[in-house]
Length: 526
Ligand SMILES: Cc1ncc(COP(=O)(O)O)c(C=O)c1O
Ligand SMILES: N[C@@H](CCOP(=O)(O)O)C(=O)O
Image (cartoon, rainbow, N blue to C red):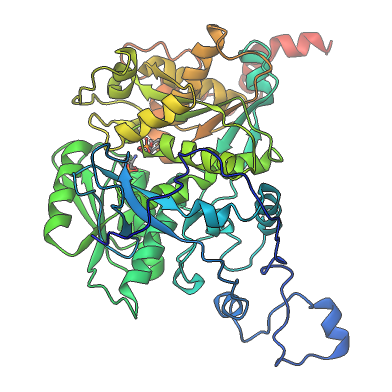
């Protein structure tokens, strides 16, 4: 352990150090300047003022435009700080460590004093100036917030697939017609992403740090990166490792993930172990294996992942022009993401980008609801469970590693935990699809929680509410096929919309359409 003499000062959990001197140094990243040594003709110069030379790639260009070092830094510290523990316990991010000396979780802490030397308006403007560009690495929604994520990493070590910057969808019809006139309902589509889930946000950070560790001068002996997965972490890990040329090893519970998820690591060249156990069993095994072999652990037990995932929260604020929504609803499984959202919102509050944080709701499948039960016990008793199968298969987790992180997030935001039965989550997903989405069952869990909280009038009609969609619906097409085939035992499948088989004959087709469109046709008097 690299204990230092510094107090583990200003964590973001402490109260807000007021932003002091504006000191907004000119943004080092924009506009891009041409290399002085490259000569272009005068007519070309105006048109291509912002373009790099043809023989230079965007990494090389970024290397020429190195941002000044403001001494921003980050390190690992125990989570939560142990009351009787060593207040100076901290570890460099270049160490390979997943647990504190007492065996607890770790958290990435930032030097908030250094960041707070710039006012909130500086950070808002800087982040806004980077959106939607191709500048390395800031074109990524994660790395556009690099100073809040991994401030010290060299851009040349970053492994990015330009993740983030995901769509924030105004769910106009779902809110108005199906949620008693909600007019400010939004869905943050984190699943419209490179590998089809929000895991890309964390994986770019983790794999970038591994890339840094493996390369000179650190040259750490890391043979590969491994994870246990319900299908999305494995897809993201495999893609980022393949992009960086690093071996990936994934442990999957046999027959419990979708075909679309399974094919992703196979296609990306990962070593795929299909194990005859559930996710919690895979998690136990990967922890044992990474303790024995030089394989770096990529699950969210590793707090680096959450640094990337928290940028989705910052992005939501940015998309609302730095206005804070009232509610954010997140489906929860291993429970890293709910904490990541809290961390992103809280960091923006502490640094003065916004003045409050939203209330968080964690939504669980009733078949895999250890957090919900804990919440209902008044946070008195946490009991891990053997999670039952659920259509929201990526959250079939009974012993979540980040349960303590989730509790901190929920307590600090006056949060709520809700659950959804299989029928509730499939109906919520299918109803959302009928209003133009193509949601995954996990998003269905979050939507079902919204329906309940709206019914109970806990969420009001004008509350600005964001539902976090965590994966792309196309990854879970079999569940939709079963639903629309009404093939699910004990489920009415009330929004099923099976295709109609019709003879290829004009009269037969007309009969079907007249029957189907009867009311619409009558209303326009054809
Ligand atoms: C699609 C999807 N949604 C939600 C979750 C829950 O995220 P977390 O495990 O961070 O709670 C996961 C993974 O667990 C997931 O893959
Ligand atoms: N849904 C996850 C489960 C593992 O979660 P992690 O965030 O701890 O990696 C998956 O897709 O594997």
